Length: 217
Image (cartoon, rainbow, N blue to C red; front, side):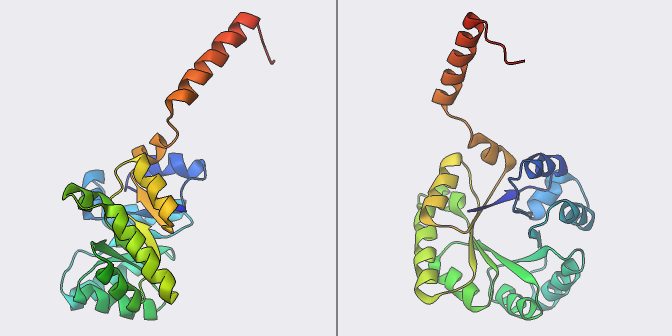
């Protein structure tokens, strides 16, 4: 499973990228606002750092302006992936942009039917939102499983990009189901390393090494 980092914070991306943990980056207007940066400036900077796709989201909701914004974002860097909402207007833009060779991430997916439409429109990625479904007492992982089954049934090439990930368990479950990609905040990716037995085992090894006077160099 590929790891995308869901942030516009340059330092956080760089830290994980240096460890080989970044296959791509996703941003949205909320993350751009949080960063305090200009969307074009920060998108270029991220694209220069990361080899994989960097999702930059349009802000318009009408077709003409959305297409104009998408075309402009695509000029910022070769690895920009234009992010559009899962609306009819968004799917129209997706169809045009993918036809021109631009990667498109269709976001705000909350049903298998929506994911099927996005695949038919040629989306590069579909972004089902796990955490937001969990918030309303619907198991977001069920949606990932439904999409996986449908896409596998018909050989759709659209990649499932599990989004709105809130925990390390979400990452594990998405991987078990077979999501192609998971995008998560840096803190969630870093939390995947945590286990109490690792911590306690290391503490014991350190204690025993000190008692034995072990020195390597």
